[in-house]
Image (cartoon, rainbow, N blue to C red; front, top):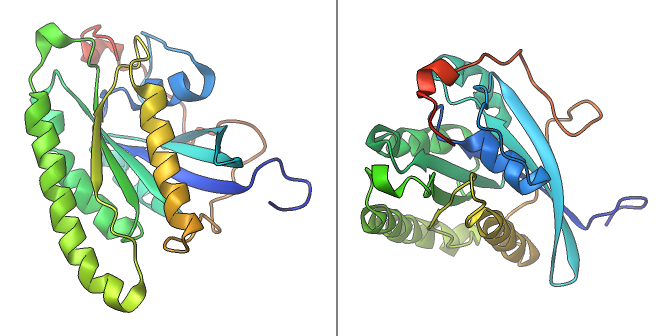
Length: 232
C-alpha cells in the first residue's frame, strides 16, 4: 500500500462484449447497486471504482465499460492497456452475442496482456423464457477454452513462470442482482491470488482519468429504440 492510499492493490478490469448485453448495468449494479431500464449505449469508455477485501487486503477495482459497437473498436483498443482482468459479457437471450464471444476473445489476444484473467458472463439470466444460449453449452465452451489456454500456458510457464489461469463462467442478472457480486468478487480474487504469487503484474500503467468516479469519452446516444425495451 502506498503512503496516503486506502488500498493495497489497484486492478484494472475491462467489460467487453456486444452492444446491449448489459455491461453498463453490470458496472452500475456492482459499483453503486443501481439498475436503469433506460440505459443508453456507451460511446467510448466509462469507468467506476469499488474496493473489496480479500485475505485482509484491500483490492481497489478500476472497472472500465468499453463500447460494444463495432465502429468504436479503434477508440476502445487503447483502453486494454494495463488491464489484468476482463469480463466477457453476452446476452443469454440473444444467440448472436454469444457467437461473437470468439471475436472478443481475439480482440483480447490482440490488445491485452497474454496472461489476463478472463471470465465469461452470460447476462440477463432473468429472461429465462427468452433463453437462446443453454447454460451447459456456454459452460462447456468456457471449459474447452480454459483447457486450451492451460495447455498453451504450460509451455510458457516453463520459461516465464506464467499462471495457468483459464476462462471461468457465470450467469448473471443486473436487473435482479443475481450473481453480479459473485462475478466481480471471483475475478478480483483470482487476480489477487495470481498477483500475490508474483505470476501477474498489477496495473502499474493505468490510463489516468480525470478526478471523479466516471469518464465518458463522448456523449451517450439513446439506444432504447433499438433494444426493443428489453431489460438489461
